[in-house]
Length: 558
Image (cartoon, rainbow, N blue to C red; front, side):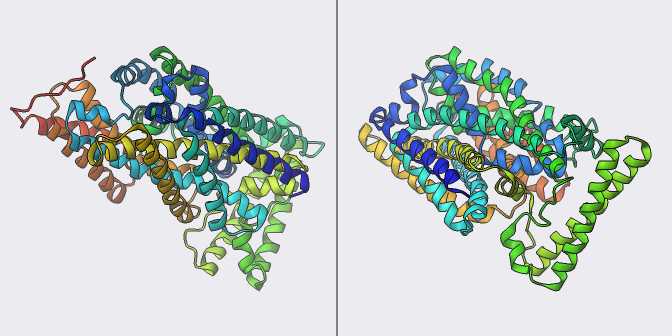
C-alpha cells in the first residue's frame, strides 16, 4: 500500500475508536450501557440492524462466493422481507412491552430459569463462534496487505474493536454503525465504478454481464426442490425464513438493536428498513464479485489467490508446470471471450464455455496441489479473491478506502455482537445466578469485563476459521446448528398455550440433537437445519408438555 492508503486507513481507525470512546458519558447505568436508555431513533437502529448483519464476511466472503458461484447466493435472502413483517407484528411489540434486557428473560417468566439459562447459553456459544468468523474475514485482508501472520491481524482487529465496545456500550455500537454504513456504501460504489472502468475498451458493461450470464453467473432463481442444494428459491423462501425469524427475533445481537428504539413503532420501522434495503444491497455486493470475475477474463488472475500458501510451494518444479498450464488456459479463455463478445453466435459461445472449463480445471489442479503439498486439506481460496483484487488493481487511495470499508463492516458486526454477548452474560447469568443485588456501576463493570473475555474467545475462534471455506457460508452454518431450535422454544412460549417448562427445556435438547443427526446422517444442506431444529423442538416440546398436568404457565404482566 502507498502512503495515502495508509493515511486513509489509520485516520479511519483512529476516528472510530475515538468516536466510540466519547460515548462513555452515556453508559454509566445498566439501561444506558446495554439499551441506550431505549432512546435511539428508528433510522439509526435500522442502520445498526443492517450493519450488525453486514460484516466483513459479506464484503470478503460474498464477493468471493459470487466470483466462484455467481449470483445464486441472493436466493438466501428471499425470505427476509416476510420474516421482518412477521417479527414486526409479533416479536417487536412483545419484547418491547415486556421491558426485558434480553430475549431470554421472557422465557423465565413463561417457563423457568432453567429454560432461560439453556437458551441463553446456546446463544452465547453460537454467537461467540460466529463473531470469531467475523473477525477472521478482515484478517485475510491485512495478512495480504501487510505480510503479517493472520494470528497477529486477528488480535489487532478483534481487540481494538473490543476496546471501544467495552468503554462505550450500545451507544458506541449504534452510532459508529451509522457512520460505518456510510463508508461501506460509498466504498462499494467506488469499487463498482473502478472495476468496470478497467474492462478492455472493446468490452462494455453489458458485454461483461453477457459473458457472466453465458457461464451461469447471473442465475438468481433455481426452482428445483432439492434439499441437497444450498441455494434454491425454496431454501430461500422456506429454510432461510426460519433462519431469519430466529436470527432477528431470538438472537440477542439483533433483539438488542430494536429494544434500543424509542417506541414499538420505531422498532418496527427499523426492521422494515432492513427488509427493503438488504436484498438490493446484497445484490450490489454479489454484482461486484461477478464483475471481478469478468475483469479476470481479460487480466491475468493469480493462480492461487492466497499468496501466503502459494509462496510455500512456488519454487517447486510442479508448481511451475501448473503455472504454465494455467497461463495457457487463461490466454485461451481470454481470446475466446473477446471472440464471443465480437460475434455472439453458437460456435463462439461453445468455444468460450469450453475454454472456461479448461481454465477452471487448471486452477482446480493448482488448488489440489497446494492442499497436498502443504498438508492443508481444508485450504480454500475463495476468501482471498476480493482482497487480492483490491490490492493489485485499485488506484492509490482507493485501496485505503476499500480496506477502511472492510474494517467498517467488520467492526460494526464485531462490536454489536460483543455487546450482545456481554449483555446476555451479565443479565442472564451473572445478575440472575451469582450477584442479584449489585449496583448499576457493578453490573456495567462486569459487562465491560465480559466484553473483553468474549473478545479474546472470538479471536481464538478466528484463528481456526479462515480455512473452513467461504466465510459467508461458515457463519451461517454455525448459526444453523442452533437457530432453528432456539426459534422453536420461542414458538412454544408465544404461540403454544399448552407448552410447559419441561417440554420447552427437553424439546430444545431434542431439537439440537436432531440437527446433529441431520448434519451427520443426511445430505441435506445447512439452511434446512433451521427447519428441522424448529419443528422437532416444537413437536417434542408439545408432546412432553402433555405429560405435565400440574404445572401452571407463567404469564407476563403487561
